[in-house]
Image (tube, rainbow, N blue to C red):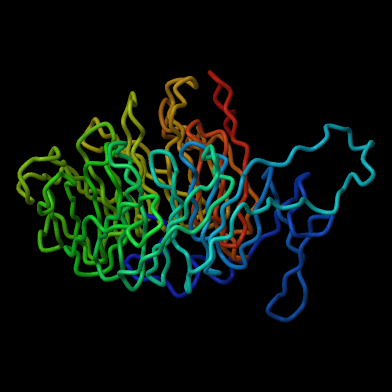
Length: 485
């Protein structure tokens, strides 16, 4: 899956207006007990109608903390691999930040003991580091694997910048610029390699279709970021890329409808898989915008315009090269608009699933063990607003056989779903267990553009189009699933 990408319509083009019609204006939502950050004590905010009069917008806020130092939309977010409380964000203000997402400790006292129970509004989290140097939006950010030695930012200015952790025990509390390079005009996505034997390697995709792989080393010279591989297989913008779970394969897709898989073996081979729109079985008119590789089987899935998905059987690393070694095992079209996000269940999984989120607001689940037959289609997963990201929760085996899926959309809401052990009928609520609100929503310029969650799904941190990152407590008790709503 890629970092932040603009939402697209059926033909693959970025729409000129919101998904909803103008008459579907922002509705008032009843406020809960939390106070919306940046507002007055009542939690009310004012907006301006088209006729110039003021209207009151009342927001719910389920978050336990927030970070609001960005001056524009937050396009991307990353979580430190060994210190999950350390978060990096990048935004439309050409700046990235690193902050500690743990909420500040507060005294446990009844409201009557407080001098001002209503409070003046919650104070935002403070930045550990402000990462400057980009001249355009920072739309991709990551920490290197396996230990998070470096934070890496990438922007629409084509610059790649690496920052090193300067704390003695590598706790992620202080950072400094190591080095920067620029080899392309614009960077679309950034992905760290998970192979522990190849540490501190990142891949990126560019607007010219090229794919670059760099290794970062902690040296005070121009060699701190070294290019170890470059590919020019795509002919148009490379929109998304992902690594296999072992870090041996890198899969990428493009607006030209092509899909390539590179084997990062010791020799520079051609792609082990190359499928293009010239193959009528694989063709998706409008291009490809999402990709995922299954950790529990030799499959890759690509999603594109018109709600179309292709599933490909991948060869093993080191196998013969070319499209002859790859089979298209499924051609799927359950949704009506661009597939913006794809995710496989983490291994091991009792029932391996593929989840797909669409610009039409739906989430579809497919059964990997039954040739990707549709298991469930959640039509209004985010109320008709685009689904920006889906991601399965890892390591929740203690919660029973059900696998939890987290989703976020342009409605500004984060939701959690049970994907197994639930009937697909609307009577069961289609498996939604919880939701968290706090962002404004698309009509008010505040959808969720990205999120991260810890390995047990107990904490969710968002990247908001409203320029705010919210921290939600999503704790799940061992052996207990949240109540359905």
